[in-house]
Image (tube, rainbow, N blue to C red; front, side, top):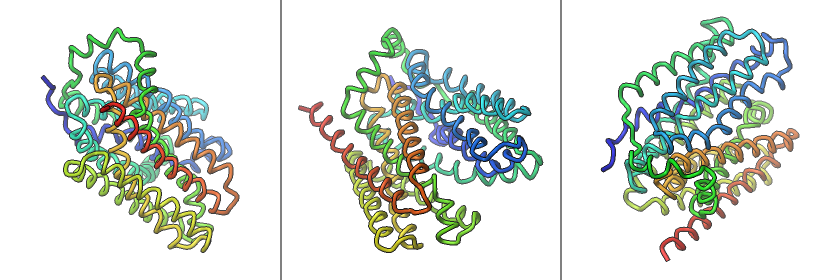
Length: 397
């Protein structure tokens, strides 16, 4: 018998903790540089340390949830997030802040990993896709409002560390809501049957599954395209298009809203046409956007149309791809949905981070090399779809 279905709204809010914790610090980086008398390149570790905590802990978080249940892992992670936030708000050392940001990232990692696993616990593959699209839509609001809240928090507290008082408060609110309202979804019999299975065996199975690896790579290369653009977007908009930070924020928020709407649409369409068809539509649209981006920049250089039009198509496609690919990944072996969720999430962050670093290394003021990287990422995303298709055909043969 399946457990009671958890609230998509609450899972979406819990998932939003991780991008919120990253994005809230972005508008205050310059202030941190002034506070600690450190170069901007060093202060950026405030962001990368958080991402390190996220990526490194996700596989372990997923494995533990398969072993002891979802609620204990989710609640423990949020407690850790709150504690780390408090230390971040009180530290007077940059090195100490960077350390606690790693811990904060570890705590935040539980939200998205547990949300995907908990949905799969109580749903079949089709229902998982629909619910994940709702959660993704809710989660998409988080990175849009976080920089605004971070800026307001800095104005209120007069100190950039004050933003972490906000993350602590939000963590406490989410922790309380989950403690009171979110049921355990992990079947006790499954916990017993898989608790003695070594983590290496679980991950060996997942990494040998074309469905899991292909789905995870679709998500990862989608994330890679996003991070490659994000790494240089504000600079390109300012230097080449003459759009200041306020204008860039407005455009980026519009793209995020588009992503949120398309994610919601994907769930509705998956009920009618099936997960794989909706995923294929998103992947094809993503490839078109990547090739169009490179072609327009190659022919017309950087113009508002050559940048905005491909990004609009790409963000719309990403709203389809993300929930569908992750739903497929956690369905590869449902009884270890936690491990599947953790590993696929980590792969997305690691590969996304690699594309971000690559984008930063090749960027010399020209957008064309970045457009090439983005285009390559979308093509790799498309090829990964065929890996999933091959795996599913093999499983049904």
